[in-house]
Length: 221
Image (tube, rainbow, N blue to C red; front, side, top):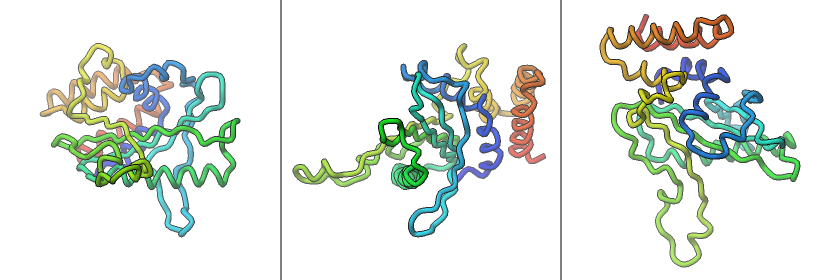
């Protein structure tokens, strides 16, 4: 797991970060129909029926169009490749849905809300694990394959993202990626200075403090 998980979690406990993640890194038409002003962090603690605790990393919900159709975002922060990440996420989603059923937190039609699982990876080597659960299961004969569980997660591999593109220049998540990729004190100083200027407004104080904690964590200061 990422050794800087606590500081990462602090960053992504701010709606500005989740908003920029959705707008900048999810190339889907439905993102335009989200009411991003309704972004709300949700408790990520679940207890399964066998009483084993699971503390999820970050969990949010947001209103979709004019209905209370919830979209939950599960963020898994990884610095090493987990070949069975899809299996882990299947377990987490199962616990989430069990909790929603117990809370009677279904949609107006009685269905469960959709979930977008996101793996945010910042390791040095490229991500090589399967992003779809079915790819981890040995091919089965006949219709037996139809009964295999299915799950796919969205992978954001920092090493493959061009965070210098024009659209990313005012995106907090892209700024985070730029900081992580900065080599040497010069580029790191420039990236930090630009971020400080950007977050100078008083209403940005909380997320500014979160970036400060994260920068101190990775720099060892």
